[in-house]
Amino acid sequence: MHLKSFLSASIIAAALQAPMAFSAAAPAEIIDNYADIALATYEDSLFSAKTLQLSINNFLQNPTAASLQQARTAWIAARVPYQQSEAFRFGNSIVDDWEGRVNAWPLDEGLIDYVDTGKYGTESDENELFRANIIANTTLTVAGVKIDASKITPALLSETLHEIDGIEANVASGYHAIEFLLWGQDLNGTNPGAGNRPATDFSLDNCTGGHCDRRRDYLQAATQLLITDLQEMVGNWQDDGAARQELTAKEDNAAIATILTGIGSLAYGELAGERTKLGLMLHDPEEEHDCFSDNTHWSHFYDAKGIRNVYQGEYSRIDGSVVSGPSLSDFVAAKAPVADQNMQNKLAATEAAAQTMVDAASQGQTFDVLIGENNPEGNQIVQTFVDSLTDETQAIEDIIAVLDLDGVELEGSDSLDSPEKVME
Image 1 (cartoon, one colour):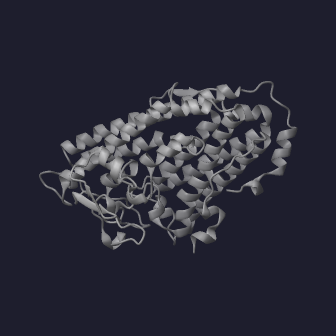
Image 2 (image 1 turned 120 degrees about the vertical axis):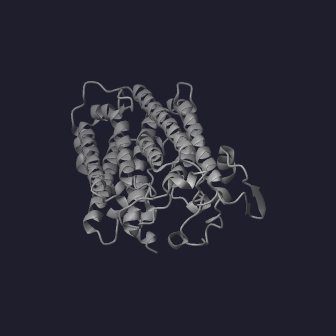
Image 3 (image 1 turned 120 degrees about the horizontal axis):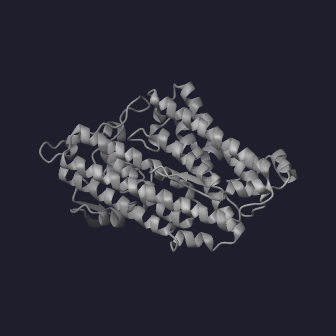
């Protein structure tokens, strides 16, 4: 991504001329607090995943519409802390290398279970496993090699099936695999309504959809694997954890650059671009992040909140306690108070734009409805969110400039940088 054209000369000049604050937070203190917030966010993600597992176990013991709804509610709750953790991606290689195991999307759900071919299609030129349907088949063949899938276990999902054949859309694990199993396909297009899988798809006595025993095994295996993966990331941010140690070993400027790379890349290339603008350009609900549950408005809200958490050095835990300390905002304010205030303003504007999407969803206009081709007012709500994130990224670039940090590269997106490529 090339954002040099985004730099605001007036903001940079004012920031450089503004009086210095009396003291600034030491970079080491900022990094420690940043790592503490990362740890707390992943601990909350783990705790909520364990709560999800309890709800799923209860559902499988008594698969009714009510117990299915409880499991779905627990999944949505589990997204709250996890989405806030995404601000630790991009700059931290350990997180980026791991993230695809827990939050990869979009996925070719026909790899996992039955699909409506009228909506989904029957084949894909890019993916021969487009409709492999692991739940219905105990074996599959990839590149002439026969794979035994008779027992659906966490190891089968993680070691064999996830991104099998080198195709990223072959998502076999993580939040979205669980989401698909709990909701099923959303067949409503850009009209209101989420997936509506019946609880009896998991019933041993009154099975619908076929292979209910294997569907139960898959749901349990994917949930246990999610917990195992989150436990690994919690360990990475503990005092002796690899992610914390990798960060604290960096020089001060490099560590600060890591933080800014993470929040800038999430704001621009990932959230504004791939997760929001792309779907809006194409008017395509298949580009919706939480496409089975229609929970995308909240996922976007908490992604944006995670950026704010990191910049302001404060995270509100699910138990009501708060982790806070010296922040990047403190550091910037001491050196360039105008740049800090500009960033604070942009963060507030982004949160307001995200809240507008949440409010629209409460009135039945979820993200897939908002991006519909014949919904100009809804389209504008989404575009305002994109614009606010782009402005926020400009503020981050201004900070990078006034701090004189070299070599910071933020993730881009064709939907923002080269829209003509998307429409080819």
